[in-house]
Image (cartoon, rainbow, N blue to C red; front, side, top):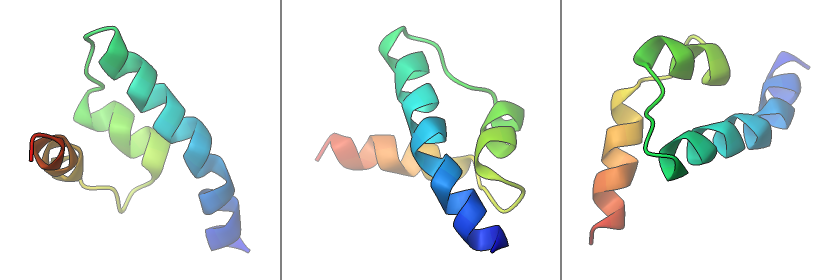
Length: 54
């Protein structure tokens, strides 16, 4: 049930991160962990952005 709850919140978290990116802002690592949970690794966001440049 906990995992389902976390996954249901994920689209809002992704939307928030994308909105911040569109305005040129970057969420701090702490804000990212707050949005995505304690197991979130802020380096994943950088890896995803690097993958967009391919």
